[in-house]
Length: 371
Ligand SMILES: [Zn+2]
Image 1 (cartoon, rainbow, N blue to C red):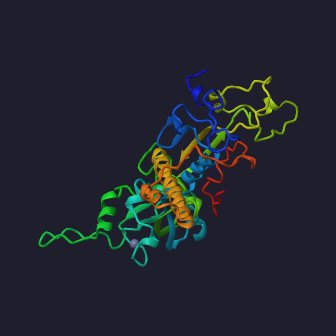
Image 2 (tube, protein in one colour; image 1 turned 90 degrees about the vertical axis):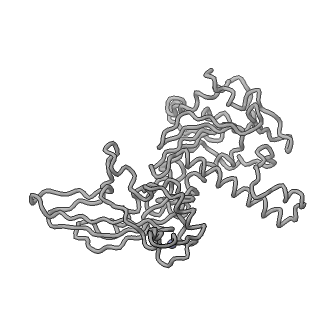
Image 3 (cartoon, rainbow, N blue to C red; image 1 turned 180 degrees about the horizontal axis):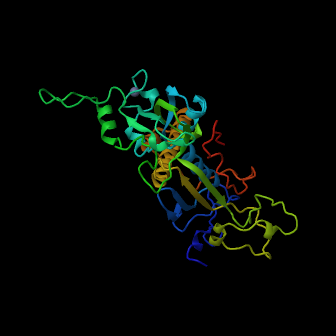
């Protein structure tokens, strides 16, 4: 059809699963998870994942939305605000501004892991906003935007080199953070780039001013959606609904009222004469990850997979500890375990896995809710 049809695992590549003869887990030709990247930019990745179970594919979606860290403004000290926007509302809007967070995994510490009391260079980025509208025509307005936020040095940074004595000594942890820290860390996304329109924070009329200091900390979307590196993740499988995981409501014509997504081009359309295969399971999963610009989407997916492997390894270790798994196995583990994709001995698809393009709460709104 289009060169990708081998990814449709419900074809001849489907193989019986050795663990449970009733569950067929279709795998790619190499019996390994396969990824096809359809398009990739800094802010959007469209890719297919096949040869894994639905539960794993959904975990990937959730991890890239809610477990990959970024930095975001979390505390604001107001020194002056005579604008019409109340302090609380302005603080909330500041929290929504995406900040450049490249390399934040190794380039900044979580505040809870830091020895400081109120945030320091190693766990916090400080930003300042000081604007006033003093010279202008009465009746005109001034737009206060995210581009006016300035990164200022956080307290207790590395000491300046001393030309008259030995270089001050830093702990290996601190040195690692200094090495991995991105020079643009904490800058509002798109600042200085005329192609990216800045985010409007407030409008002021003549004689009004705003002066505030923001503390931006490292965090994850599970804690609050403002830390999510992605604004939305499209997630779909079985675009033809061959598995009947969903029932379409329609008025007169189901096909006309529910147009197929572009992902349907990558699968064989159903053959109406074929009997329904109630043993079939989804094999290829379609993702459309949209970033907010804080971290390139490719890095988000890479980092998300690292986190998922680590989490799975921790579960395996915990289970082994609980059940007293044999010692040879534990030696093989060595901290990171390759999860066994083929061994799904349970049915994870019963709970109404309808095709879901909502991204499950990726919108960084107030009180972020992650499914
Ligand atoms: Zn600190």
